[in-house]
Amino acid sequence: MLNNPRSHGLWEKSAPAAPVTSALKGDLTVDVVVVGGGFTGLSTALNLSERGSKVAVLEGVEIGFGGSGRNVGLVNAGMWVMPDDLPGVLGQKYGDRLLESLGNGPKMVFERIEKHNIACEATRTGTLHCAVGQKGLRELQDRAEQWQRRGAPVTLLSAEETAKKVGTKAYTGSLLDMRAGTIQPLAYVRGLAHAAIAAGAQVFTGSPVIGTERQGNDWVVKTAQGSVRAQWIVVATNAYTQAPWPQIRAEIMHLPYFNLATKPLTKEQQAQILPERQGVWDTKTVLSSYRYDQAGRLVFGSVGALRNTGTGIHTAWAKREMKRLFPQLGKVEFDYEWYGLIGMTNDSLPKFHRFDKNVIGFSGYNGRGIATGTVFGNLLARHISGEISEADLPLPVTEPETQSFLGVREAYYETGAQIAHFTGARF
Image 1 (cartoon, helix red, strand yellow):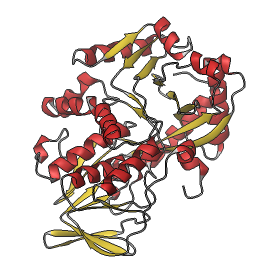
Image 2 (cartoon, rainbow, N blue to C red):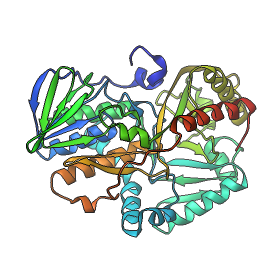
Image 3 (spheres, rainbow, N blue to C red):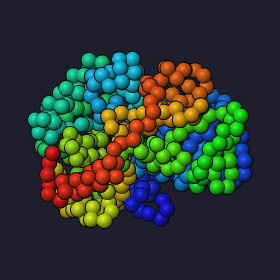
Image 4 (cartoon, rainbow, N blue to C red):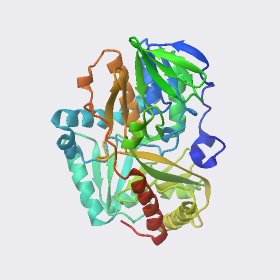
């Protein structure tokens, strides 16, 4: 996108075409205007259109331009926060609701894929959260116990069992979550766009919002060449938010994350490494992740940005790390490289905001955007349609809270990832 091969990398090369869209020109009246063409925005538009609402989606660049089109593609349940900690942070009512909603999140994603016949390389063999050292194993033991107590289909695997599933002896154990899986994320979000348009939504790209104005009981959302009048505005821009809701950006810390895709592995190599096609990530602070695409490429990623000195440092580290994990690969070469931004909140939990009357949105997905965006889009549609009240949502209404020293902290994490990868630190 934007003639930048490092924006979406392999996903842009292998995803089916997006629907044909254009910039908004002229004035339009609908029931709901959705700002942002990612998982949340298009899930909202699809669910509302299926309920008979007139919907317009305004995307500033292209469908899936933000985190929805750049991420690893792990469809995970829950959040980074331990299950037992959620009621303590959100209160029992909201904590239990969020656990239930996001615990069932992957199921909703795969149901959407099946219902709308979305070609996005969906694989439902679970994910493996792999333990590094005894500290990592203790974390997974706690996480397994907490999810199992809630009836989740998660299994704690031994080091030996993990080695058989992953193809390396580097881990002390792993947590297999059979709710989860992998998808081609840009293909999925483009599929949601096709489905939303087929259901009656109007989707406009190259149409960044430059302002909003209240006129009577309606909102008028303005772009450079047109406007949309609607009763509701859904703000679904998350980590890539720009004007006119800068308070979202001020609440979210940008954590860069890169992915590198190998050449397709041989059949023999694929039989040894992740033979069941689970997606993997580990317990390190500067974590790593990997999974296959449909062609047998191993997509390997970690914290960091592929820009300036980071490009060479992260790429060189990835080659060393893959050789350490999988010596059977021999010399590692990458066909594609790209990176994006994860939106991190202070407490690693998403937020629900009411910016004004009938102006609402979720943000801050903390690296769990696929299932979370799909679920939250469904909930927003149900709320706007009158099926559930604001009090029935899995998050309370909160005011955006500006993170202190945001730019300094973002630079610290980007530099810290380079230091970790340059020195080979494993923490």
